[in-house]
Amino acid sequence: MDRKREIFQYYVEALKDVPGIAFMPEAGYGRCNRWLTVVLITPEEFGADREVLRQALEAENIESRPVWKPMHLQPVFESATESHGNTQAGKRKYDARRVGGKVAEDLFERGLCLPSGTAMTHNDLDRVIDIILKYGKNN
Image (cartoon, rainbow, N blue to C red; front, side, top):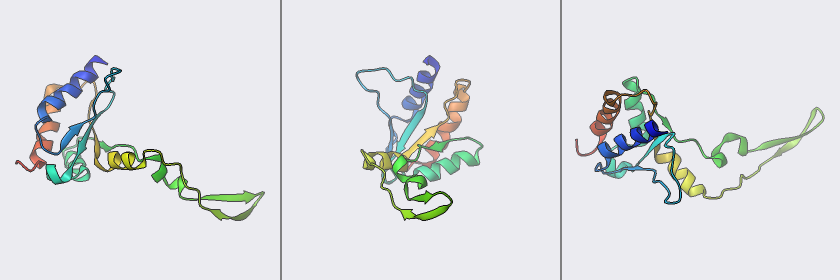
């Protein structure tokens, strides 16, 4: 857990003044293990969206990924088939319960999981940071 927190803090220190880049905050009532380092990108402020940045990292053989797709947007919740035995009775549409749907959708749209493996060196982290900085408006 300590190494994950160090990696997170390294990213924060390097990117804290970059417009349009924000990090997931830590709740005052607990201590996050920082298993995953997620940045939230505001394209209008940063200069590129999450997908452009993900592809730029991928072009340099650096794996990153969007934040998980919210459950209510998953295809399984678009429709379900009712069947009795071997015959199909028809299709009905089921709406997934959406609590915090707008928040989850925003996190999915703007969130990018950065590499944060415990074996990463400062050089590895700097490589990721350099690519992020390259895509910011100020460059």
